[in-house]
Image 1 (tube, rainbow, N blue to C red):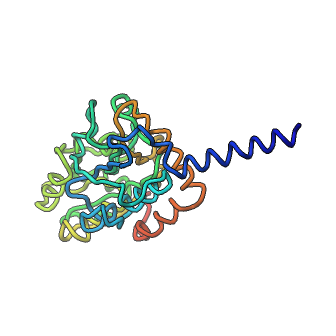
Image 2: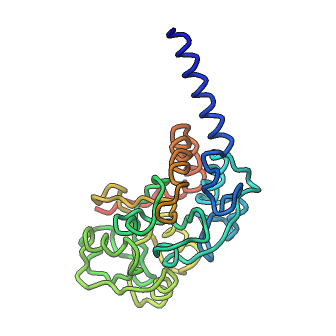
Length: 271
């Protein structure tokens, strides 16, 4: 009797694995049957996407997207990319994508109007300073006296208030491009970015700027964790979460992070 039950349980387990591998956990749950539509920024930057071409699978988020799609049973040709602005996607309502990957921090406020996958990355925050502030030591005392800028809709604003507590109110901007322009013009001294983005901005976008330090991911009570954004109530969420859990357990997610974000080492911790 127990042998019969064991064989039945094994059969069910094998069927479940086969169903998952065949992509059936996503059946009837995507915008277009048999296709996974993923959104990213316009443009999308390295190291998240290489050369603004997510379809290449190059860059951390692009690589995670294709690995996850494969885990869900989608072939690479079944993945379609669209573009969206950051703020547009976090508004309530219908979406023109199944998933959106733009370094969205999972917050309780956002989770009230959209859904998130389980985290695929925990991001340390880093301090990027303008050309006029590159000699600032990586200490909280020195950082408090700088003139800060931040995108008003991001988690950088509460992190500034909670961790750095600057002596001047930060100047708030509509998007990262405005922050970058203000820093290039020396209108602000510093801004908080996730570490990979800060390194890219310093190396490519803001001449003379410097990443002077980083905070440990657990420096705050709510470390900055990135999740894939979905329409509120999206039935695809369980399938996505299961795929990411499998990638975490197998070590594939860690391997992708090591490949694309390995240059984020060597920046001192802020004391």
